[in-house]
Length: 136
Image (cartoon, one colour):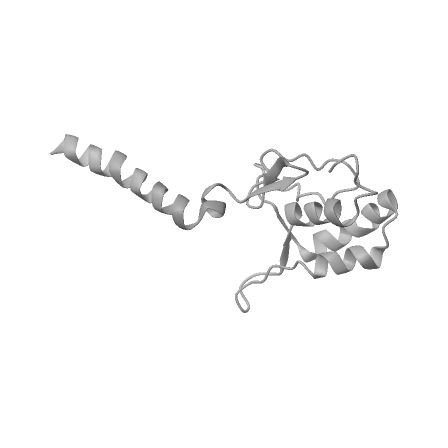
């Protein structure tokens, strides 16, 4: 009975769930990978291998131990706009519009609006290729 349980619960069920996820939701099942210029630059759900230390990018919050969370508050994003504007020459109004246009909502009163750093930076590279040609 233990061997059968091990095979069913430890092997067959996970393989079944993985297969269904790959067929039904391949983008999500693979980590919502982001591609820029034909190469993978990161994930929309994790910043585990994305380096945004250059002053021309929105940077993730520095108060999390793992550094994996790709979201920051609206206030944190807007606070970075002057630095990015100064480093790139992009108008602050344009950067404000980019941030406000990519707010992710919350359920009613539970939490605060936030933005995804990965998405903002990918949009910057795509929308301003002259300023980000070294990063595209």
